[in-house]
Length: 152
Image (cartoon, rainbow, N blue to C red):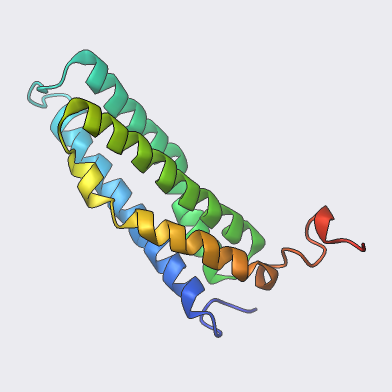
């Protein structure tokens, strides 16, 4: 079985960064949960709307982002098509969620810890989107895996 270590330093890097992103995402939201939402946590300084938005981001990240990060890391390392797809989804999630966070923070006039902590994932995701597209054929994409790759 071919793996990312077999000549694809960039795929290995993306897999490692996505695995690290999964760990950071889980740790960040665990900290938020125990400081803000857990029974016995001190009352939050945020209003109900901000608390709801924070809870929604937590639920979405722990449901979708964390799962896709873990799947992408495992799938990229094994050079699987589903790993490539999950990694591209992770890249888009980073760009989307950070755009929402930056707009929210700019509107509120305050920089949130998540906006700072996860900032490095934005330029990395832009690079990874392009890099994964360049090596897509190594994942079976464009060689019969999808209809657009059939005979012309």
